[in-house]
Length: 173
Image 1 (cartoon, rainbow, N blue to C red):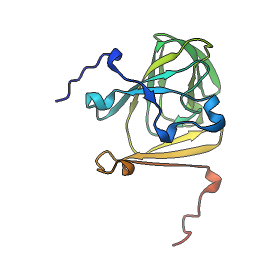
Image 2: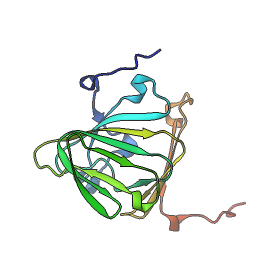
Image 3: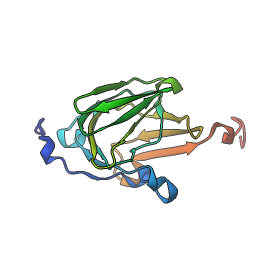
């Protein structure tokens, strides 16, 4: 059995995975380092990671999950979280619940500091496939993970689009 304990000091932070790494103009708003914990501990039903945001940055666009629930524990720093139509200041030791739902449950953590990093523990259920919506850009994404696939390129399916780009159900049949 994998050792079920890890000290936060032992968690190595790395840039976001390539599929979620911003480029071009978006790099000015989004940047994060993450350290996966769930794989190290052998977790199966929950995902855990440490996320660190540099001053003025967010890890992800404003989004909601239709399937999975998230919880965040602020470890260091200050910032704000947008949830639905509201924004709330956040600081060290705050715990934030983000249940699945529609646009009213959309959320985004932003490091509003100009000088210090914001670090948090993220915990989420790991149901797959997942559907996420992005209210600011009117996009949606479908993410499915297939952990038993031997080929690393086949372990993740990610599709991002807009509803108006959808094909007719019967097209090509």
